[in-house]
Amino acid sequence: GGQDDYEAFFHEGGHAQHFANVSSRQAIEYRYLGDNSVTEAYAFLFDHLPKNRYWLERMLGIEKWERFLRFSHTLNLLSLRRYIAKLQYELKLHDGTPLEGKDELYTEILSRGVLVEYPKEMFLKDVDESFYCANYLRAWILEAQLEEYLKGEYGEAWFGEKKAGDFLRELWSYGQKYRADELAKELGYQGLDIDPLIRQAEDALS
Image 1 (cartoon, rainbow, N blue to C red):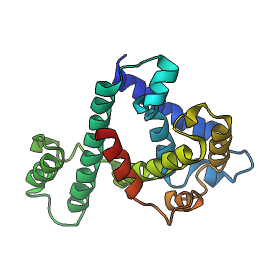
Image 2 (tube, rainbow, N blue to C red):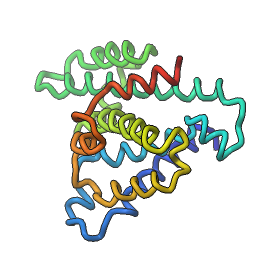
Image 3 (cartoon, rainbow, N blue to C red):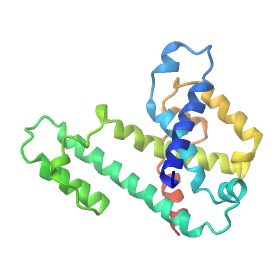
Image 4 (cartoon, rainbow, N blue to C red):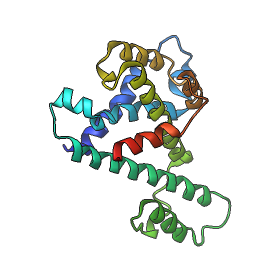
C-alpha cells in the first residue's frame, strides 16, 4: 500500500496499456514475441509517473514533493546500478568456466555496484533467465529517451495531453514489431543513447 506498491501497479499498468492497444492487424509474432525491452520501457514510463513533480501536483495535489522525489529517484538509481552489476556478474557466471569461486565473484560485483554487502549464498538464485537484466537496462535507456521526447513535444505535463496519448497509442499499436534501438531512431535519436538517462538522473538528484 506504499510508494513501492503504487509504482509496481503503474509498472504493470504500462504493460497492460501496451498490449491492450496492440493492433489486431499485427502478425502474431509481433503481438506476442519480440524485444521485451520495448514493453519494459513502456512499463518504466508509467512507473516513473509518481516520480514526476507535475503528476504529483496535478493528480494528487502534493505540493511538498522535494524529499519524496529525491528518495524515489535515489531508489531508481540504486535499481539501475544493481542491474548493471547483475549483467556484469551474469556474463561471468555464464562464461563457460567452472562455478568454483563464482559465489565470491557475485558478492564482489554486486556489493561494489550497489554499495551494500550481498551474501554469496544468492549467487545462483539472484539470476535472471536469458539475460533479462539486459532487457531492463535497454528499457531504462529507451524510457529516458521516450520521456525526453514526450516532454519536448508536449511539455513537462505530457501525461495530461491528448496528443501525447494518441502518440503513445500509435507506438503501442506496433506491439513489439520494432526493437528498442529501432524505436529510439523513430524518436529522432541515432539509436539507444544513454545520455538522456544520465540527464534524467542528474536532473532528479541535483
